[in-house]
Length: 433
Image (cartoon, rainbow, N blue to C red):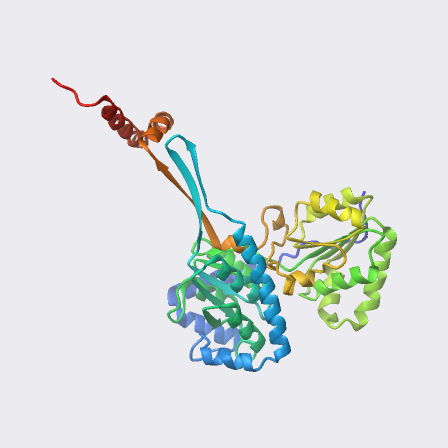
């Protein structure tokens, strides 16, 4: 039985009717008026109307010159971890060809999409690590063109560290636009850049709704809401570590849910006390405290199985396991619904967000029930093919014809029967009158 020491909503529905209506109006206007409408919205919403939205090579070099060498080295380290893991994932995916019947060869190929639009959020914080996830990974997949887009910060354009990260992650083009107008620019193309086949990356409620409404015209990765963290912990967990990790994710925004599920009431109470102790001096207190007060929860359960069941019901974006060693593998094996799993006290969510190598574009709002996060396979189309010999036709055509006739699709049946008749005639050989 679940006993709540603090209970709050797990989901924050930011996509209101007003958001949907606003986004719809913007996209319709942009579709009708093109770059002129994009420019108007950029000026109105971001006070940004440069001569060109596309960032030049010289501007990208200058952005790099503004970054200190230590940060550059750390960025390079993180980029290499993401690249290495994405390459390992790609290497695990193999093309397939198999003869399923005599004369029937079936197969599939993993074919990269040609053009990707990467949205790198930078409104509240300059999220430079997002470019590692949405630029490096499609490049590893073999994508021909990656156009990366990020919002302006003030009058100088993209934050220098973000621009440097986008450039060194391998973006072929960098565009300075934010919000709905950015998603539209990636979808339809801008300033001679090609329209994307798929757009990826997180953003605010307007960005998420723009992706939803544009889906079909363009592919998308997933619909991301406010970031989430869940922690399953027992009496062996360190209350300060648990509290710190909860607040660390809560700083993303004032509607970011955070839940602790614990088998120890004592630990749950200690974590609540630790949070109250940490908040007065927490560096992002204004955001984290608002988020924790409104969307923070602590649940006490009877055992690990009940913790697993409750966590799977919530399906959190990030899920940490801070448990005795013998329970870690058990939970790893039994858990089903999460975006990314952080196993053991040393695996904090921030590692996955920034530099350990896994992708931080992950499902939220319980979408982890049916999808994982962004990965190299998202940029690959698994396309099947079939090759048949006459022997294959002799085995397959009768069933195809019969099923097609049962469906009253006589034309379908005829395509199979024609081949079968010709095969039978060839086998019979010439006739003599």
